[in-house]
Image 1 (tube, rainbow, N blue to C red):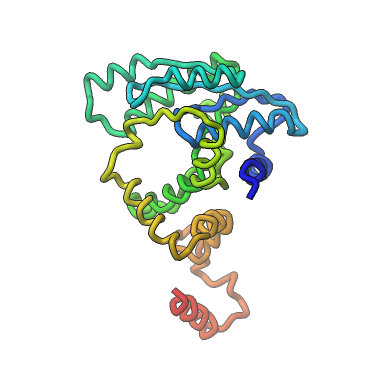
Image 2: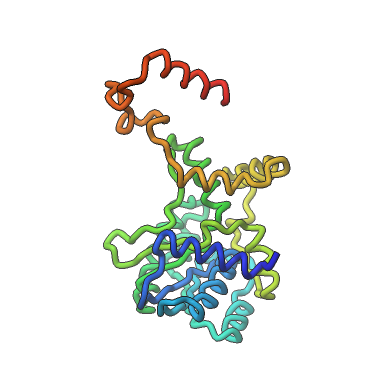
Length: 268
């Protein structure tokens, strides 16, 4: 398998399907220092040269005091690659780390979001690209279903509250086994974050579940992604989508309906 060709095909499909990037856009890639965002940056820079539309790519990194290795090697690598990169040391995040060392992910994300918008505005970007992969989408779906009672996942495209920025996730169809191998092929220095090393978290548990299931079902994530784009709301429990008065079932006998329900239950 041609790794780069596969990567660009999947990223291109996501960009085209969800209209992520448009003519004249300036795209700022949020570099976390990990394999996924580095792969995303490389893919978008290649597409910048080949796409039928004109757009530009830059990158930035928000330092919140949680990197486990020095950031300088990443900066040197990006400089050699000719990447327009901004390194931002977020002072409010450092104060948070000192005052509330056990703060949760939600609070940290809130600080990071504020910094991201501030940086993107300074870079003249109207699009912000994040390195969430197919794995993240699947884990988010399962996490929301099991722990929040909502059938939802990450959006491939959304907007900031004031609609100043379009937020995109072009790796929605790309799994982490691809980003891992591609980042390794780039020879890019990985700068891990302490949060990614934590064990015992819900995310770690979900990763283990997927890893075990995929040993027997290698296309599990592809099927889950397909399901997220192939909804059948009338077969769920949301009253907004249920035909409780039977109007849409006109012409079907009650016995036929029960037969269908029984068949689905057996298949489950």
